[in-house]
Structure formats: structure tokens, C-alpha cells
Image (tube, rainbow, N blue to C red; front, side):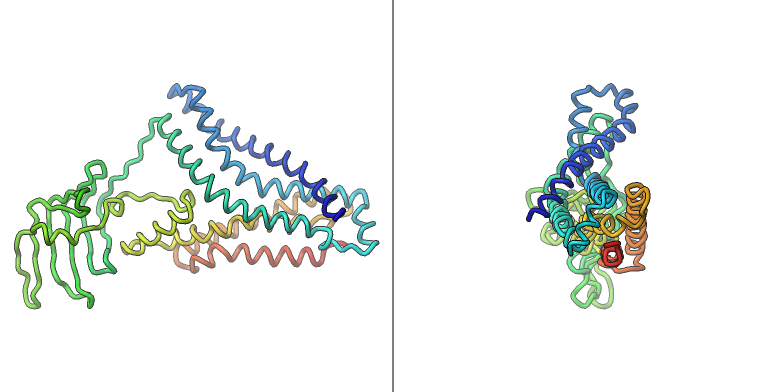
Length: 358
């Protein structure tokens, strides 16, 4: 128990100082990147302060892995340089046993990071984007053009020339309906369709429905009863530049289901969804790396350990970027694209830990 308290007493001051230092640097970088825009748009200091405050939770998620890495390397390197770990090894305490409190803490921080991202960071990031867009007068257009999507398990296919999000109207709409065997049932054409908020379906103006009886198409005007099947919500037709990374787990899951239902590509979004669960493990990985690499050199212990650990961490991010791109283009399953780097570097870290100097 005394050993656990000793590890935490050495680790926490370094960790907390590193967290606030890195978070402050990241806040400063964001401010410097946007300050000229704030000046040009004459944004009041109070609004800039509110924008920076909402950006703060995001900086903590970036600062956490770096802080764990720095604090672990500094603590272990100091102990190696003062021969304290040598004395512990001589008394029968292994490196794994000594480092176990740090590993357990890193595992807890990984879980905490996931919860913090889902409950706090997503909301604050959205607020940050809203405040920033309003202050800089940046408007995002959700209207869309040349839309083709499927609904009702592939039995209804929508094709529209243009969707106006402000008025919730579809221009030059074609709707192809099919039966369970995917055989043609009817084709609806309307130069304009308007979303009815009260009845939750599209109402066509001058719509024509062509029904197929097995031999030919028969035309007739589209009445209200026929339109009741056109229930795909307007959100589906929007220019959905929704980033799964900036949505909660529940919202991401619903968004991916909507993409699947509409027959739209979803591999990239699904890999980002899995990455929400995989990314927090970077905290555990950097802890393993710092423990396994510390003490590899007899001279300049801290500098060499930190450099090697940073190099391995950068390699992890590069590997993750490559696998996520491969998942995006269908070269890897989305699950593997997100989790393969985590599994690979946990194995590498464990090997480094096993063969570290004790």
C-alpha cells in the first residue's frame, strides 16, 4: 500500500501540471489561429472568452495522453537516475508490480476519457462551433442537390434534383416503389414536394403516379392516400456533413442506421463510431510505452525515454490514420480499422515491458 501511495504521490503533481500546461498551450494555439478573424469581425472579448471556454474540454482530451506520457516518463526516469528502482528490483519488487498502480490508473483514465468525451466534449464542441460560426458570420448550408437514396428496406427509392432545407421542399422528385421481391410497383413524379409537419409525409404538387401492372405503366394523379407512403423525414435529404466524431454514441448509432436505411455509404462513419471506443485506450498505451521504454539508456534517461515514447506514440497515430483510411475505402472492415492499432500497440507495449531493464 505504501508503494502505491508513493507512486501516486510522485505521479499526480506532474500529471496535473502537465494537463493544465498542455491545455493552455492548445487554447493559445486555437486563439492565435483565429484571432485575426475575431479582429476583422470585431468580435467582443466576452464572446471570444465564451468560445475559448467551450473549447477547453476538447483541449483536455488531447492533453490527457500527452500528460500521462510526460508524467510517467519523468517519474520513472527520475527513479532510474536516483537508483531507487535498482534498489526496489534488488529487494524483489518487479517493474510490473511497481508500475501496476500506474497501469490501473491509466485504465481508469481511459474509461473516464470515453465518458467525458461522450457526455461533455460533444456538447461543448457543438457550442464552440455554434458560437464561433455566429461570431464570424459563417453560415452552413444544409440544402442538397442530386439526391438518390433508399428507404423502407430498399422498397422505396427517392431521386430529387434539389432539396431546399429552409422551406423543406424537394424539387423534381421521383419516387420508385417496389414490392418485397424488388419488382416495380409504381413511379411517382412531382415537380415539387412539400413536407407536411402535421401529417409527417411529403405532399406533391401536380404529382403523377405511374403504376405498373406487369405489362405497362398506367398514369394517374397522386392523391393524399398515395402520398402517405412518402414519409422519409427531411433530415435524410439534407447535406448531412455530420461528423460522427462530433456526435454522442447514441446520435452516431442513429445516424449510421439512417445511412444504412437510405442506402448511403456508411463505412467511414462506422469506423469513426468504433474509434470512439478505441481511441481512449491511447492513454493506456502511452502508459505502457513509457514504462517499457524508461531505463533503456544509462545516460540522459529522461530525454531518451521521452523521445522514444513520443516516437512510438506518433507511430501509433500514423498507424491509426492509415487503418482508418483503409476502412473508409473498404480495404479493411470498420471494426478492424478502429481497433487494429490499439491491439497492435498493446502487444508491442507488453513486449517492451516484459524485456525492460529490471
